Image (cartoon, rainbow, N blue to C red; front, side, top):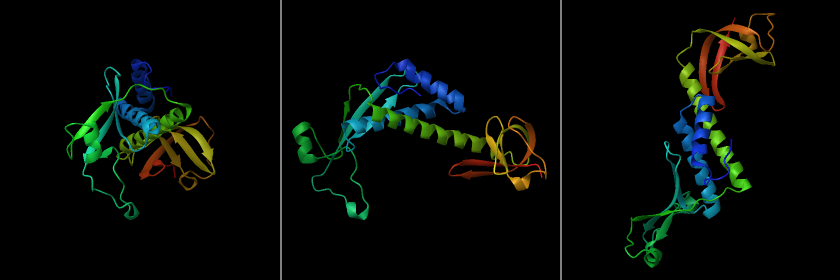
Length: 216
């Protein structure tokens, strides 16, 4: 996945989003949101984590807008860090704000468009991790939603790998597992074998949906 910088070709961003969405069978909007978050993290790394930075990518044109939002708060307001409270990002005390904004008032927000910038090596790696993680989450959710109502169905698949007596089966739009105690005794499979199984359970787990298969 190429994420060299937000000043890159706008069309390229949309092409990346469309290609990933097609490959993983998820909505393009999810990929665009992931790229927006990646750019946001990169911008906060560059400008400082205390800034409220927001990113928007136009899904039709690929136009990317990065802006910094400042919210004015009272001078005396504070947060109890020891109690677990976090000071919000992007805030400015009223007395400080009056030096910058003539019409500053508590609760008012100001937006500043930031110029395009190139990602450094660390920011690029971080962006990849963000996008990859978000896409993986969306792919797992899509698989769960697709298979959760198919318990009791007979499905065809291809053996993907065999590990510790368990058989992992490629179901096309998902991956199922047939544990040793759910297979027919003395029946062995090799990678690439076509297999017919019964879906007896679908579970949502932290590492992804578990599509449990049986031939017993």
